[in-house]
Image (cartoon, rainbow, N blue to C red; front, side):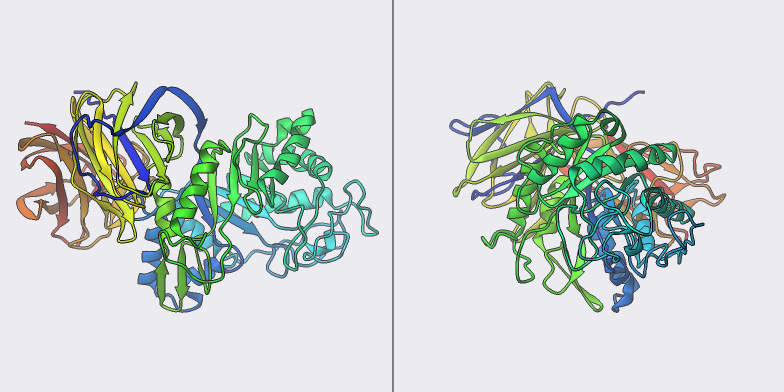
Length: 598
């Protein structure tokens, strides 16, 4: 029987007081209203991401003492779709100094290249491989500078320009094509390590000179070089990106120059700009995808607060993401460091074999965990001027709505889900504030396409709304599901964007939160693949009680998926269903569970 899943995920970031999920009446007089209109669409979402350039990947991999277990915990926080932020883009830096793929002049721009590769790239290869295992498939490689011998100033630092560009004549010759070959070769080395680079940038902050790796390019020079690299990028299946300018207003100048040139306009696939000094409150003038490709707030100390008025707390980060998505109409949002050391404004602070987590991570997670690659932003409006609303439809039919409320008192909000296909069902809230980080709350009933809830003060709340008219599907890779292992996508035939590949150990469980409109008997269908010839047994635990043992027989191949139907008793609202393996082989690969009354 064909089963339909339509879910609405509503994320609320607020500045009001109250209790998450409280007040499940369908209409509350005087309540603020939020209306989602699924018939009006805006930009497609490519994803949300981070970087670990300049040695941070190596630190995350233990160069300063972080143990294997702690490495896994940090990776889960950044990349897990069930317990972390579920980030889906990794930005990789292309080194230009002694650690580059060609640190020594091969003898001129026309000499045979003398590339070198250590398979590590300062920890970035390991990190990319880990990210891929979590389901990341968007890898953006970006160069801060060409090697010094290719530039007018003879060093990869302190600005200088690529030799051969207009106004940049060098005695050593024209290095434009050699630099383009160098960039493409970087992507080939990553391909050797199993990492398919998808997007390639040739400049970073070309309007800024620094004492570290940097290279100046005018808008006209960026247009000129795009005509050299662009055809090569196309040949190798790469999206060429430009130009990662310091501020969004500065990026507009470069984008305008590209758009004014008919050749460059066709070659540049992705426009990328930073948010330092000016923010993406308006769109870039292009029909191509745009990313806010680097930002973290200014600050002088490590800060874990959600909302302390410092300007680099979680609340600030949530505001900036909202502005970029709704004002800048960006397709992607890439934060600077996911994890770093000292007074970092990253999401996670690393210190030897210890780490600490900032609420900035959970601000990002309210968007990145639920708004998945391929989603489309759709129309949303509110009667309350304090609420900042954004709404998105995922490719699986779910809808995510994020609101930021600047009010200072508790606010009751009635959500109207128009043209979403939602009639009745349940809305399960996930709460982030000073004391919670995406914590599941009791479910609220949905009736006639609407529900009302009291939203807590200065909090992020995500409401996952599922239609009760048909069986509901719960993907293993989607929060609040928990996978004691990794979310993988290497065996075809799965639903959604991945499946749970559990650790091969007894007790390495997979857990699903199943919503029931009423208490009683329910049918649970669990879809799995077991490529071995040995059955893998597991206890099914519902709301903390073992109810039966399930035997997951061999399916003949890891790419052959079958469903097993179970009958269980459920309570009204949220039900925690855990498959707990009892054998050393662990669980089979789990794709999803479906729930239907009776």
